[in-house]
Every structure is written in C-alpha cells, then in structure tokens.
Image 1 (cartoon, rainbow, N blue to C red):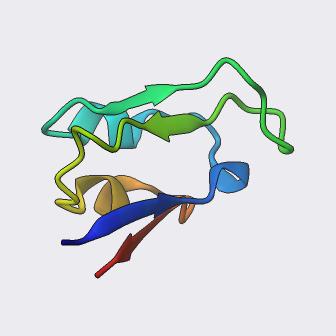
Image 2: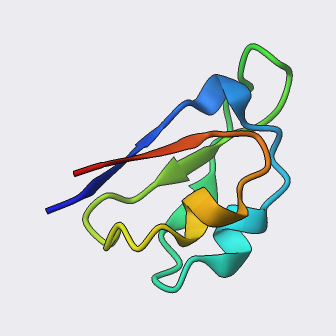
Amino acid sequence: MAKIMTKTDRCKGCGLCAAHCPKKCITFTDTMNSAGYYPIKVEESKCIACGSCYTMCPDGVYEILA
C-alpha cells in the first residue's frame, strides 16, 4: 500500500492540499517550521494515498512511496 511522506520545512501553509483532500485528513500544525510558516500534518490513519495533495502542492511538500 502506498504511503504519503511530507517535507514540512517546504510547506508555506497555502492550504491547497487540504482543500482538495477527499478524506479531509490534512490540517495545519500550531508549530512554525524553519521557513516561518505553520505547515500541514496528515492524519495517516485516514489517508488513502490518492495523490491529490501531491498534485496540488506547488512547493513539493509531498512524496508518494509505493
């Protein structure tokens, strides 16, 4: 089963991934990343690794592992 990996230091908190997630399992943390943004977090138990977040993210935060 595929799995989504995140590189939260790249996240600028735009919210495109969260808006397009069919399972609504992407939210934002309350801890700032090294770039000064509040990055996303993925609730892995709900994630189906569909790739919507990967497709929508302009900053290369997501990686899909097979």
